[in-house]
Image (cartoon, rainbow, N blue to C red; front, side, top):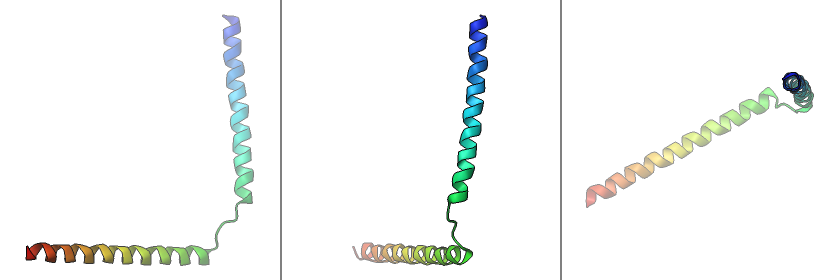
Length: 73
Protein backbone atom coordinates (compact mmCIF):
# COMPACT_ATOMS: atom_id res chain seq x y z
CA UNK A 1 0.00 0.00 0.00
CA UNK A 2 2.79 2.41 0.85
CA UNK A 3 4.42 1.82 -2.52
CA UNK A 4 1.17 2.49 -4.34
CA UNK A 5 0.66 5.75 -2.46
CA UNK A 6 4.25 6.72 -3.19
CA UNK A 7 3.81 6.05 -6.89
CA UNK A 8 0.65 8.17 -6.99
CA UNK A 9 2.47 11.05 -5.32
CA UNK A 10 5.35 10.75 -7.78
CA UNK A 11 2.95 10.60 -10.73
CA UNK A 12 1.16 13.76 -9.58
CA UNK A 13 4.49 15.51 -9.09
CA UNK A 14 5.72 14.39 -12.52
CA UNK A 15 2.49 15.55 -14.16
CA UNK A 16 2.77 18.91 -12.43
CA UNK A 17 6.35 19.37 -13.62
CA UNK A 18 5.38 18.36 -17.16
CA UNK A 19 2.45 20.77 -17.11
CA UNK A 20 4.62 23.67 -15.90
CA UNK A 21 7.29 22.83 -18.46
CA UNK A 22 4.67 22.67 -21.20
CA UNK A 23 3.18 26.04 -20.24
CA UNK A 24 6.62 27.64 -20.14
CA UNK A 25 7.41 26.34 -23.62
CA UNK A 26 4.04 27.56 -24.91
CA UNK A 27 4.74 31.03 -23.51
CA UNK A 28 8.17 31.01 -25.15
CA UNK A 29 6.74 29.96 -28.53
CA UNK A 30 3.99 32.59 -28.35
CA UNK A 31 6.71 35.20 -27.97
CA UNK A 32 8.31 34.00 -31.21
CA UNK A 33 5.10 34.28 -33.24
CA UNK A 34 4.99 37.16 -35.72
CA UNK A 35 1.53 38.57 -35.12
CA UNK A 36 -0.21 40.41 -37.99
CA UNK A 37 -0.50 44.17 -37.88
CA UNK A 38 -3.87 45.90 -37.58
CA UNK A 39 -3.59 46.92 -41.23
CA UNK A 40 -3.14 43.28 -42.28
CA UNK A 41 -6.07 42.16 -40.16
CA UNK A 42 -8.36 44.81 -41.64
CA UNK A 43 -7.23 44.02 -45.19
CA UNK A 44 -7.82 40.28 -44.74
CA UNK A 45 -11.18 40.86 -43.05
CA UNK A 46 -12.38 43.03 -45.94
CA UNK A 47 -11.18 40.45 -48.47
CA UNK A 48 -13.01 37.68 -46.59
CA UNK A 49 -16.28 39.64 -46.40
CA UNK A 50 -16.11 40.56 -50.10
CA UNK A 51 -15.46 36.94 -51.07
CA UNK A 52 -18.40 35.77 -48.91
CA UNK A 53 -20.70 38.33 -50.55
CA UNK A 54 -19.57 37.27 -54.05
CA UNK A 55 -20.11 33.58 -53.30
CA UNK A 56 -23.48 34.33 -51.69
CA UNK A 57 -24.51 36.32 -54.76
CA UNK A 58 -23.46 33.45 -57.02
CA UNK A 59 -25.64 30.98 -55.14
CA UNK A 60 -28.59 33.37 -55.04
CA UNK A 61 -28.31 33.83 -58.81
CA UNK A 62 -27.96 30.07 -59.33
CA UNK A 63 -31.02 29.44 -57.16
CA UNK A 64 -33.03 32.01 -59.11
CA UNK A 65 -31.99 30.56 -62.47
CA UNK A 66 -32.84 27.02 -61.40
CA UNK A 67 -36.24 28.19 -60.14
CA UNK A 68 -36.95 29.87 -63.50
CA UNK A 69 -35.88 26.75 -65.39
CA UNK A 70 -38.05 24.59 -63.15
CA UNK A 71 -41.01 26.93 -63.81
CA UNK A 72 -40.72 26.33 -67.56
CA UNK A 73 -41.31 22.61 -67.20
